[in-house]
Length: 362
Image 1 (cartoon, rainbow, N blue to C red):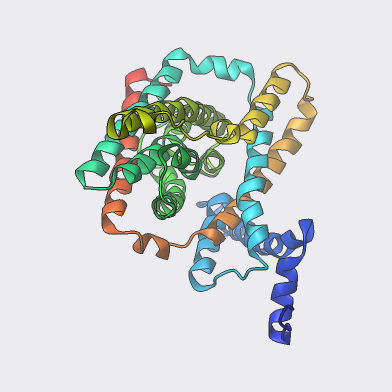
Image 2 (cartoon, rainbow, N blue to C red):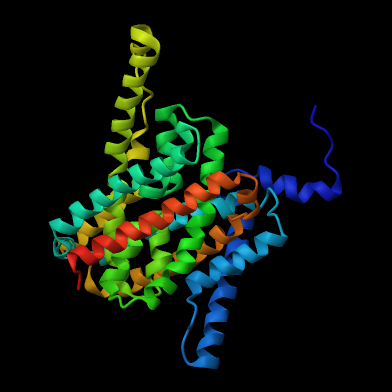
């Protein structure tokens, strides 16, 4: 028999138990409130200063994180916040595909595409080396290296079963990438403004350094559509590297089993990685929308409305991201991990700037 529900618990528990879409409503309302506040602050900036110094997308993260530092969302709110931070942002990425055509992809050129793959490879090697130099366990170093070089939490989640990573290692790696991912989104526009960079160059820098595909929108949309398109395309190349990296790690794990444990352990096959980790659904959706735009299946008159919806969903999702970011989790994960993640990110930014300079992008 279930215990009786007291009046002080009933609202929270009943909302948390509601199935389906109803359980999302409290969290969606919380995110919407933060998003409206961000839009209002941006409007106030325009009224007072004639321009928006901080875009609503960034303001939504800042306001959400400030609220999260003094308030922990109750159980009833979390499903909607998680849905907004993940699913709504992935939908925004899919819609962004409507703004990109095949001609845009071809304009990037093979040099930049190959250079992106090279940056990812070098970033993994450098980050792993830093981890081992600072005496992190091998699996933790691999998690951080792949998360930093490819796509943050998604890469960590995909790589973890391949290398048999412990839950504690995965949690620590995700905690750091979640917080630093927000830091990158907030600080990258400042770096871009400090350097003489065109929209294309800034988009490439964002695509090469921002951890998550959806977060590229937050870092580039305030700059412009060209930066968002370039950043998303480059980021897609990084994400598509996740498949080959996971397969390579599976081979390495199998070889280590053969060396460390003999033929009996070597007969055990490496764990399978779900296809969804190697090629997330929103990447497929982005590519399909891009194909539809290239074939003329999306009317030009619909593009402004799709662009507005993309931005609106991104602001809502960034509010959820702020509400989900607990900076205190970083302090609990250890200074060595913090050092490795930070140095790895700086190395990735350095490699990205090196590639941009080498290719002399316009």
